[in-house]
Image 1 (cartoon, one colour):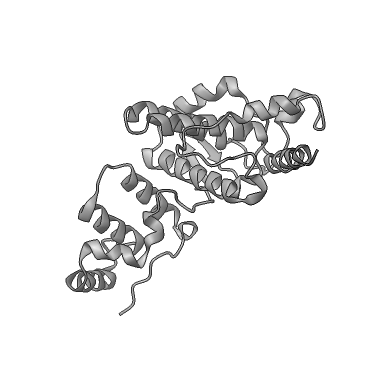
Image 2 (spheres, helix red, strand yellow):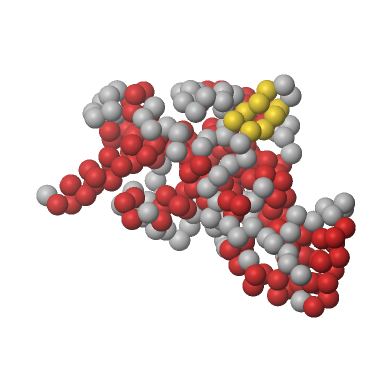
Length: 250
């Protein structure tokens, strides 16, 4: 008898990612959480009768709390998730996500998204409603109404109105976006090349703003402030990390 589950976060289907995000923010724990996650990972549905029989057999022979040993990666406090749900629909408008690992966003988009991410992390436990407002703003930065991989310049003045529209989405979409950004940032901060830009801290909510880095380079290698803001995130970070290394050598 074989029951397969995704081996990585990026292997989750959009449906599984949404359901996993909803579960992680549900407050469930212990055996209830373990059982719910198991059902999500095997993609159990009412019409999959053969799978239902297999699941019943598994649960008769293995304690629910022991299931996590087969997929410990989904119990990590930081998901190794670098992809996003490609598009969402709000009314008649479609909004499209950035590419895997945020490979096509500007440094200003990352700066704004990171500030909202830190806000959500700061209020997550004590004020979940306020944290969710930050998650909506994070999604408003990352999802655009154009499918073109060349994204438009960020319009900060319109973010609140856009976030208000995104409130119409099922919360799982917003939570999934939050997890995707968390995973992308974790991937970036794990790279040695960016260690000087993202020093390790005990709290995910702390750390300086990327806007400070933008201001320090405005009017230099990438042009004026606006041109610097529109610079590719990875191009900007690569240059900045090299500059830090060169300064240390002097």
